Length: 318
Ligand code: NAD
Ligand code: UDP
Image (tube, rainbow, N blue to C red; front, side, top):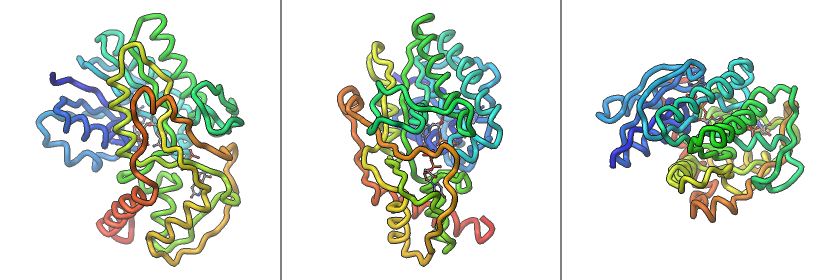
C-alpha cells in the first residue's frame, strides 16, 4: 500500500536522507521545512520526483495535510544553530510539536518525533539506558534544546494518554554523514572541513570527552523500523552507535584519513558540554532487531568524500 508521509525538517541533514529512503520504498512524501538550517540543495535531486512535494512552512504555525505517517524532524540540531535563536528553538520543540501532535490526532496518523540523547544532559550514568532520567541544566545555554526536547517527549506521552495518538520516540545519539551543514559547528563536519582545508583542528577542552557516532544510513534504517513497530510500542528508544571515542581520537582519525597536515589546537570547552555519551541500545536490538552496521572509519571516508566534493564545487569561498 502506498502511504502518504509527512517529513518535517525534510530539507535538513537527516530529513533529506529520510525523504530519499521513503521515496525508494514507493511512498508519497510531503516535505516541509522553513529552511532555517536546512538547505534546499539537499533535496534538489528529489524535486522532479513524481511522488515528492516540498513546501516552505514553519511548524510553529498550524498545518493541515492528510497523511498516514508523520516524521517530525524539524528543529535545529547543532549547538551553534539552536543557540542562535533559543526562543525559536523552544517554540519549535513545544508549539511546533503541539501542532504536529494535533495534526496526528486529527488525521489519525502515526507520528515519530525526533528526540535526542541531550535529554540525558551531562549524564552521570554510563552508558545511558532509556530508564535514566538525565542530568540537565534547566537554565544554561543548551537548555532551549535539552528542555525543549524533554517537554516535547512529555507532550507526546500526554497525547498518547489523553488522546490515544500513536507516537514513536527515538532518542537520537550523535549522527553524521553527507549533507551535514558545512557551518553548523558539529564535531564531525568541523574536523573534516578543517582537515580538508589544512586549517587547525579545533579541539574543545583536552579532547577527553567522549561521543559515539552513528552513520546516517544506519539511523534512517532505524527510523523506518521504529515507525513500523506495533501500535503498542512507543519508546522512548535509544538509537545510536555504541562504539565510543574521545574527541581527540576522532581528530586523529580524521587527520589520518584525509592525509592532512592540519595541526591540532585546543580551545575552551563550551559551557555544559557533556563529558561522555554512549547509548545503551539493548532495547533497539530487541524491538527493532537493529544495530549499526557501518563502522566509524567507513562512514568517515564517505563523509570526507562528500565534503571534498562540496568544497571543490563551492570553490575557496565555501
Ligand atoms: P538539521 O539542522 O540538518 O535539520 C533540521 C531541519 O529542521 C532543517 O532543515 C531546518 O531548516 C528545519 N527546521 C528547523 N526549525 C523548523 C521549524 N520551526 N519549522 C520547519 N522546519 C524547521 O538537523 P538534523 O541533524 O537533520 O536533525 C534532525 C532532527 O533530529 C532534529 O529534530 C534534531 O533535534 C534531531 N537529532 C539529530 C541528531 C544528529 O546527530 N544529527 C542527534 C539528536 C537529535
Ligand atoms: N567539539 C570540538 N571541536 C569542534 C566541535 C565540537 O572539540 O570543533 C566537541 C564538543 O565540545 C563536544 C563534541 O565535540 O564535546 C561533540 O560536539 P557536537 O557539537 O558535534 O555535538 P554535541 O554532542 O555536543 O551535541
